[in-house]
Every structure is written in structure tokens, then in C-alpha cells.
Amino acid sequence: MVKIYFIRHGKTEWNLESRYQGAGGDSPLLKTSYSEMDQLAKALKHIKFEHVFASPIKRARITAQHVRSQLDFIPEISLWNRLEEFHLGKMEGQKFMDVKAQFPEQFTNFREHPEKYDNHEIGGENFQEVIDRMTPAVKLIARDYPNPDQNVMVVSHGAALNALINSLLNEPLADLRKRGGLSNTSTTILETVDQGQTFKLIKWNDTDYLNRPLDSTDTI
Image (cartoon, rainbow, N blue to C red; front, side):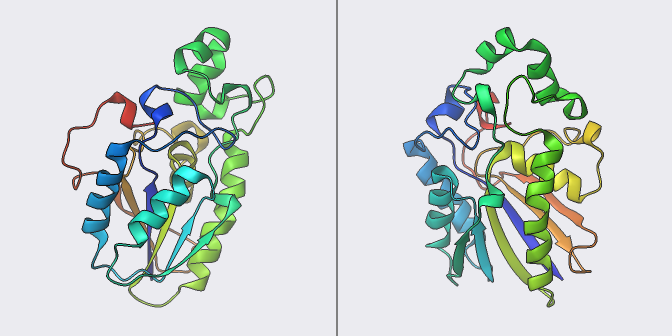
């Protein structure tokens, strides 16, 4: 049995500005994000993680390294391209409202109707492509850590993690958003007892360890 702790990266300047980042865009983590990563690390400090896997994109990589360095048992870390954020084509770097004005149908579908999201006009990946890219990584982790009471950390991105985790819980594309979004520096925990054949949700989008109320720019 392994528990996989899915961590969304710390909050960035573009998160605060309500801009799409995607796999091709990136912006610096806010100064306040480092204290929030400290709060996350404190919450996870005494858990023995076998390994940390992270997206190589800077905001996720720094989050993983920062949290990992404060754990009582410091595990090895691996950077996997399969854990990157959505490739978002023309949306990357643009403010949400600008995308809404330019691509109103796909703006709505990306946020509310994943099964209808068509990436041909915008470029990048659709939801199924992201799920197909990320799922083999999680399945491999589940197979590699089959022993009782093992824990693994995966640090990645909000939109991609939301699609991945709900897919692992057998939600259809139309229902990927039914649990809501994932917040910056949040923790979502899945457990598998059969080496990744099935997954059970233990905790969704936990931010109780953060010492501030969240606002709309924290969650995607």
C-alpha cells in the first residue's frame, strides 16, 4: 500500500495576476510563497517519504526542493517531464479575461466542460492527452512502491493534477471539475493497495496548515 501526496506548487506572480502559465510559461514564486512552503513542510515534516517526484518546471521544482530540504527524512528527488503542466498554446502568458474575450467557448470549456474542450484553435494539449501523459508516471510509482505504509510525494501543477487525480479516481472527463480546484501549496492524498490498479481518495485540496484565508487567485 502506498500513499501518494500530490502537491501543487507555491503561488507565483502570474497566479496572482490571473494569467495562464502552462508548461511553456513560468513566473517567479511570490516571496510569501516561501513561508507557505515552510508551513507545508512543517505539516509533512515527520512523514517518511520514499521519494519525491516533481515537474521540472521551475515553480514546481523549487517547491519540491524547498519542502524536501526540511523533512526529517530527506528522500531522493527525480524530475519527470510527464509531470509538467498542461501545454496551453496561445493561452500561455495571457490573462484569463483576455482569453475569455478571444476564445470564449474554449475558455468556458477549459474551466467547466473538460469533455468539450477543443485545443485545435489554441494549440497545446487537451484533457485526455494530459491524462494519458501523466498516468503512466503514477502507475509506475505505484508499482515501484508496493510495500505497506510507504509514502511518495509528487509536486506538479494545478490544472494537470486536477485532471490526473480525478481520472485516477475513475471520473469521466465531464466530471473532472466536480470536486473543485486545487490551491497553491495544497496537498491531495491518494492511496492504492493494488499497485495502481485502483485508487482511493484520502484527502482533497488540504490547505489547513496555511495561516491565511485563501482567495480566488489561489485555486485553479
